[in-house]
Length: 402
Image 1 (cartoon, rainbow, N blue to C red):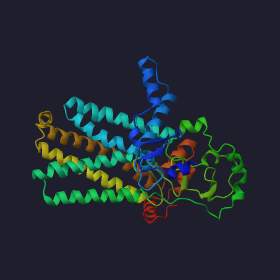
Image 2: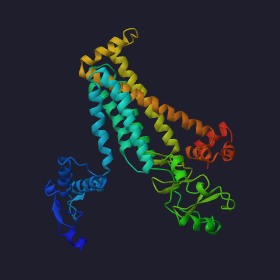
Image 3: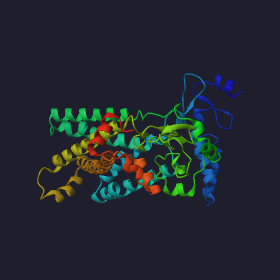
Image 4: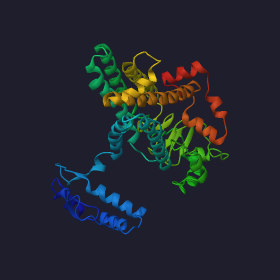
């Protein structure tokens, strides 16, 4: 019945969540949830979580875009992930506000922005939500710095065409590595060489509480990726195949070093972690390109930010502090200065991530394996995986580290 109704809709009409035919021009008409929320506020009453949830759902149901291919107007959250929008708006706005005076620079760049991002990061990990917010933030940051170089710095003839061309090449190469990494690692489908009957006793036990997460796992779960079988790997005699585990979520066998990501809902070979900044898992097929992406990002951040600082203040270190205060006299120079500080801080933060990744690779460990070993207080598996510095790197570069 609903399909018949959809076929008779024009590109701007749709069937709302109440089963009624509506039009995108009726965006603000007859919104009972909004009227109820406003009425509660006028009466001095609090708006409950359930009421806010209904209001949010009604707003998303009304935000539609015309669909000339039939079936009526489409919900905007069905076409795109709405979490990509806040960074595009708030990052330039934050930089502009921070460029007003030094106090706002310190508050926005070193207090508000880091705390807000970390809070949302922990919220995403806690609820295991998939979001493109962090990916949008990373791309917007890199794009904003390049746009300032292209539109403000380069026209002033303070950098040579060759240097700008090199920056453009680096900018393009970063995006190439970025989207190449986003292909994701190799997904584990099923391996017929592993006999399911070997795990039948564990499968029955796990299937009863397939979506259960214990209090202990909630406390220790870092929110990234967890192998579904680690919670049961300590059961004596549970697994009879030394080369395979059984995923109670995907219901198939998988190699020992593969893992299940609770955010993606899939198993991947040699799973390292789920990267929220790329909105994908890092594993066997894209770990190397991920490292290259980090290196290019760091080089771009340090190069761009330090180059802008040299352009603004020169090489005179003695008068650096007075010049930092004088830069706020010009809004354009202040925006360049704040952007340089922000990008420099981002580059330094990613350096710590890169160092940690290089340390793990040098020991032939993944982030997931290291975390689970710390969780179960068992380093024997890590010692077995470590084949020596040069052998570990040789296996990583050749893809033979499984």
